[in-house]
Length: 451
RNA sequence: CGGGGCGUAGCGCAGCCUGGUAGCGCGUCUGUUUUGGAUACAGAAGGUCGUGAGUUCGAAUCUCGCCGCCCCGACCA
Image (cartoon, rainbow, N blue to C red; front, side, top):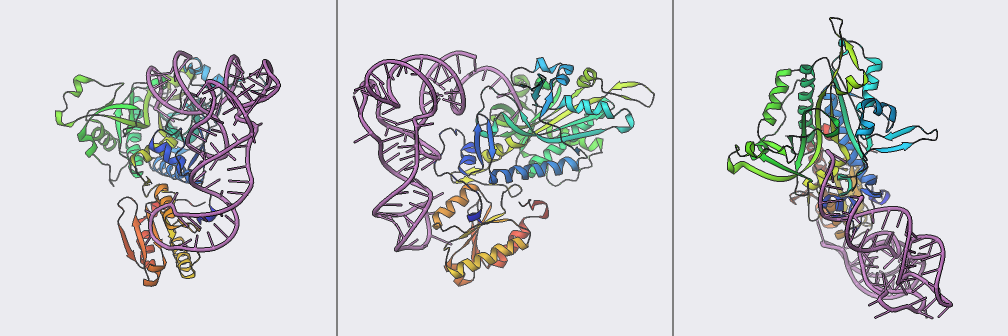
């Protein structure tokens, strides 16, 4: 993409309403624009990252055997009356009435809808296990939205629902989700720690939240520092392997890690003193096993091999897709701006033309731009007539992990400068070598969508 | 929902107390200049002062209503 033809409305000054780094940077980098309290438009740069997050979530969900679909944002109140949540959910539920006077709601979650789909089409144990998921906009009418997309009212969320014949089978689904979430967050360059949590209005008593440590987090957390040494890494997982999934869950949840809601001081004191940590964190996902709560309320049963009709065991699992933007920036920025992980970056590299209008420099930039694109990379070429400082400042702020600087001095010597955003280290090398370096660096799985 | 605050040019703000022709910085546009970290000079465009009513000869300024937004708390993915 050529910057002169793109839409990147960066702000030089910080909007007054932004209190935390991620909100400030998302506004300044032209990623979002507030449309109302807790509601945001996603401008092109922000939309790219949002879609990259979605892509990773989709890939990891499907790797775990979960099936994508899409349910609507607006739901009939009738289903919620059936489950009992229409009255139980409270004022966070945005209630709407259509022209015929029918009660509707903008979904904050989809247990009722998915259960309704299930009961209409699934009748036999032979069709289980089944896990369906979607990525859809939700709305929760928060009393006080804040922190930009971290605590918006409208938010994009992946929510998935598993259906199993027994508690034992459903707990495997639970474990499988925990494993797949570990992989998902790690691919985004995040350490998300599973912590024992409260289930809230979803119900059930088996639940973990995934939390990313950050000073600006809204949750207080208590944990054994040994847990932060754990990484999922490149290990192969067979998601159908009950023993393996359970072992991974045990590995990542056996150490003390709880939010302040479930904190147990006595248990915490069992952690060696030097490893006790009290911190703040951002919740980026949660998994639940809630048994037959919705199945019983809504009559979702299947017939067993013995001919009995039994309510299906369910769980639900969410990843805050739009919120992740905020969490990732909180964890990846410096005083100059955002630093994207390579897996999510909106563009793989930025090309800075130091002397726009100089024939040789322009030609070198064009050649490099074409070479990167030919290798499947998606560079952002700053071809504006701005001065070098302005171009550097923009690139630093929007956080592309790599920058290639092309100026007349380097062109005369046959080199360009490749700079790593995170470390600031740079190296002069011939343009084709820089293109090869970047192509090697971005593995095939990290080639993001173009648009 | 309790408490506090804000709404004036694209962004950040001053002006309001004490009513009298709407300002500053940045950005934008034009020209010149400059060219490795938001360059310099000159010129220009851009505002129903959130909105409605009231007081007044006269309202950004005073009064009341409404709308929107932000902050602290409680709540919350």
